[in-house]
Amino acid sequence: GSALKLTGEIYNKMKELIKKRHLIPIAVWFVIYMGLFGFLEIVPPKEVHLIHCAMDDMIPHMAVFIYPYVSWFPYIVVCAYLAIKNLDDRQFKKAVLVLTTGMNIFLFISFVWPTGLNLREGIVYDLHTLSGNLLKFVQTVDTPKSVFPSMHVYVTLVLQYTLEMQKKLVPSWGIWVGRVLAVLIVLSTMFTKQHSVLDVSAAIVMFAVLAVVVEKIVKK
Image (tube, rainbow, N blue to C red; front, side, top):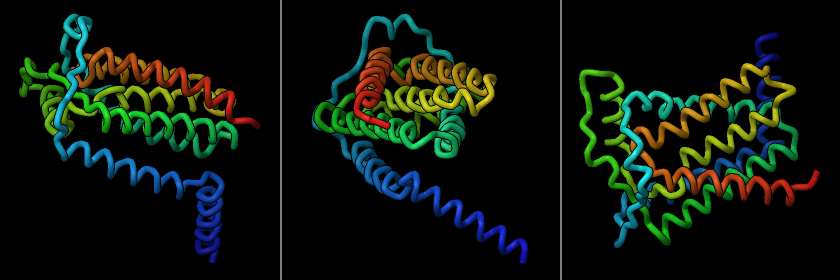
């Protein structure tokens, strides 16, 4: 009986949270977003604009940066969980608005001005190392197109932004782990040659502009 009661309580809390945080509309948006992104990955565009700048040639390729690059996935899970659990309504609304607006802008750019990279062409994978194998796997799965602005960087900045809002709820070491990881993830996109400096810079500028705009729009 007590186990059944506990299960019922958990179910009711989850139901309440899903409703309160509008998680179903967010999930519907995400499914549509991934469908459109998948279309971009599968259907080759007529013309691709290669993203490149002089700084890209100065940054060495370092396979070891694949570790922070793939740590992005657990980083997303932890930060999203904390945001759903801890943020107040205004903070959550701000975070969702910044995240979805930026990702929608990225999709729009990718459709009207398709982008790509040729930074990986000289890469020789050291298949005697785990990092070399992991990098080869990631770059086989993740094609070098639809790269501007970098969503890897943009989503990282939004998630760290949500973590910074939780200073009273998350221990300071947790915030610092997030900061260090966020910096390493951003750097990893360039050192693995997954992104150009221009992709990264555009993501940072877009985040800064949208965060300021949304702060002004979303009232208490």
